[in-house]
Length: 171
Image 1 (cartoon, rainbow, N blue to C red):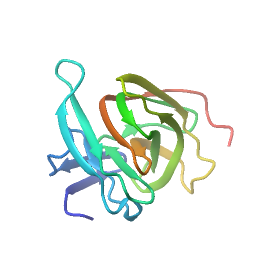
Image 2: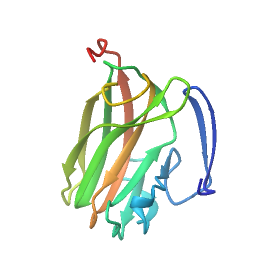
Image 3: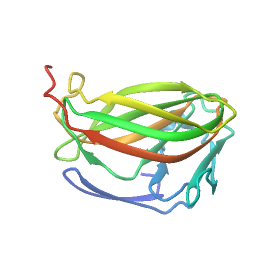
Image 4: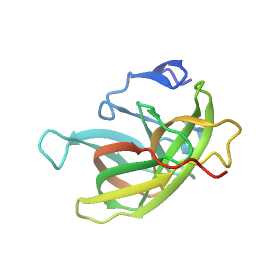
């Protein structure tokens, strides 16, 4: 634990209170050691009225950077996770989901989709199918996870996560 967050979990009902003002409300830095040294993160006015953009620069860690959504969304194998966001900059971003068991234990990182950034604001969308093929426990909820490669310099805004109920996973 890094001291930046207070976690409270009962199954998939999770509360994350972010003590860092560097990112907009609802997001926090992933403190995995592979993202060290940590990228510079700040917030500025977003491209749409009333939005805040996450500004991420100085990404020099071997594995880039990661940011996580505070919320966890109920989801099971066979559901689809749709993550949409506006972004611009240079480098590459990835959108993925983190899987948690119904009891709240971390299962691992689910599937992901990568994007090459452009200089202009653009809408990006990742639609990912929840699967339990690689996890020890069935998925009970997910958390959105955005990542960027080393050298990425970007702005990200208006991130939305939606779970669309689907068919049971054949795994």
